[in-house]
Length: 116
Image 1: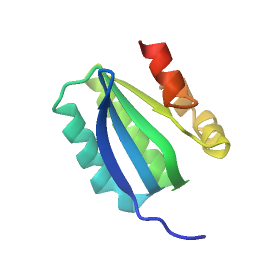
Image 2: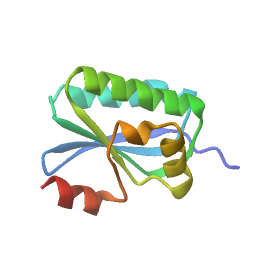
Image 3: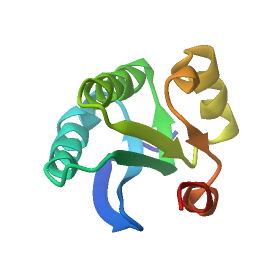
Image 4: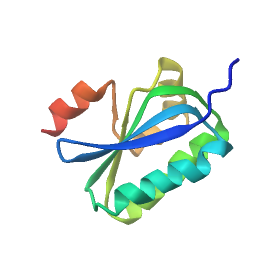
């Protein structure tokens, strides 16, 4: 398996703050992911979106990072939603019950059409 370093880019789309995730979501993603989240929070959005379309790997530490962001969002009365999960990671989100606490969309088009 080829290691792909983690990166996160922020963009605004139709009133949403989207964090595009790239590479591996693991312990090495902690600082960048939290910095991106905190930067987005400064804009005070009601909904924050995590785009997993370009994520190559998520381990248990990565899942814990997502849970931490979910807890922060919930505490601040923000909605955290995701899209772009592969079938494998969609199953992981179901098994870990993350899908019970956040809306999961197949892609950005379906997200935007529902949130209009």
